[in-house]
Length: 169
Length: 218
Image (cartoon, rainbow over all chains, first blue to last red):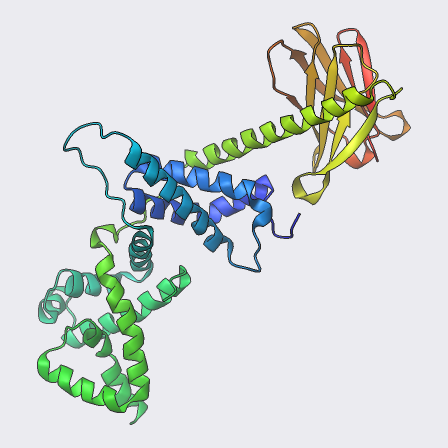
């Protein structure tokens, strides 16, 4: 068996502890349904265990490998759901975004959750809510210049967080 | 361009990348950026991040959703079930092999060794010389606590009590527990014995009133 193979139950438990949260978060973002997201994570670890001897840490990280498996699982689940008849007309069916776009969205959101509250706040208020710097500065009780520099350091922190979670431009 | 001066400009680069600067400030900063390679590189790098922002939904900036704690157990259970069914397939292959060689095998023997968990060898043991219709096989797996034993019996009367034991050097005998064989039950009994696999010389099972022993390869 190859060194670093994910063939032991203990290896799988460790991989689960390290990555299940992210995999679930992304599956939920992508599938829009917590039941399906759980199914996707379960299936991902089962496939990872079956193919454990094919995992080679020389080629890529365990995280990258698990996300590659999840990608296929999500596509399969999306396909299965698409072929299922819709139960109620007009019912809200979560959209199945193309995988790469969903992954990017999730990565940016995950990066946002990782940066400091002060940085996230100014990006939220000035960018997403489109509020003027003066208004945000008054609300936070800081000079406008501080809002501006927090936007700058916020974007930098976001860049670092994106690199951490595997965004590759 | 002094570093201190650059720092002042630089802290406005985020606002520039996001298109948030008033016209006059924007023009002045762009003039600086045009003449400063470092600030230009920084602006380009920030612009990559800025272009990604529209993809995110701010409603998801709160706490990341966590999988339910029970999911970890379900994943572990799924893998254990898969592992058991793989093992059963291997046991059946082992039985087919032992059936073919039963005529030649005067005594039971260990027939092959499979790689098991932790990279340590998992021993597959087939019992030979059995009465017609009875099949017995076992898989032994090393653990820190001793040996895990998967016992597969087929063809005894339903309800038959089976007691399993292992033997070590100098006649050491350690019980591995008991189970009842039931017709139609296609599962293997999972047992354990406090004797290291490396010291296990033989495995035995008393099926009803008869005892069968198979040698375990050291």
